[in-house]
Length: 293
Image (tube, rainbow, N blue to C red; front, side):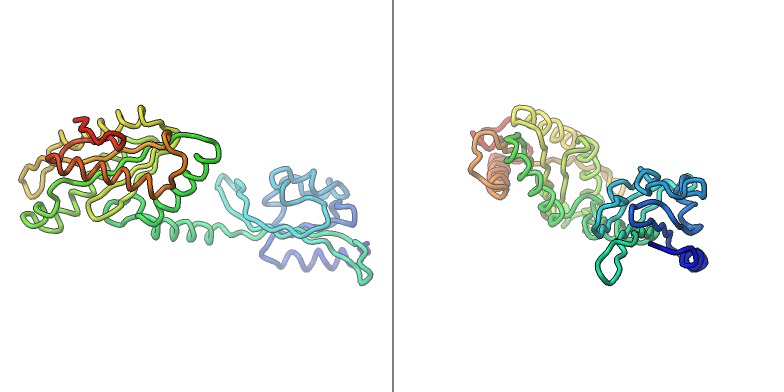
């Protein structure tokens, strides 16, 4: 148990710290805090001294429990009308014999670090040219969706599309025009998808789309609609108009649960290659490899 003199010394020391500190007794009841903590939690006041800390801080209940263990983690709080992120550390204080004397909680503002990490994640996950997910990040997220779909026996559809005659376009219009074209196509594809769908750049002129919770008979109309959107669009490059088309392969999961994600992609790719061999600018379903448009 803390003595009165110890608490006074703590009060003077804690206010000099940059983190928010909250201290409880052996029963987890509030006995001391610093000024930083009052900025975060209105209930941390002199009037509430002696009350259980966990009851005073419902926003961080998962972190601020009076259990005898150490917990760490990020959580968010609204501070002066701004969303900020904190690291929380909680530890039980024991004497030399192991008897519990109290518990403290430290709240360290990590908002700047949080957003720097988020920006870094995005920068390494996005394809810089098209501003959609790059292949590595797409595969990582698609694997998670695949595991979930298999576990809960949920359907999904995969669409693989390649820009027709892209190499010829580059040769005649130049690489800068090619970059502009790919960015425009990515934007159109993204606008035609749900927020839960996963769009990525799979290769130089290839785009890949995973449709979670989507059986093939719902995924096919979407593939046809996306194909039509791109094929009907007139792309203006260097004051010249170009008609762009896609060859598209579509595969679904509901007929074979023994395959993995790579097999699903391979089936969609075979369908896409079939579309190209039949003259480009069409959508092929992986099941029967017959042209749909």
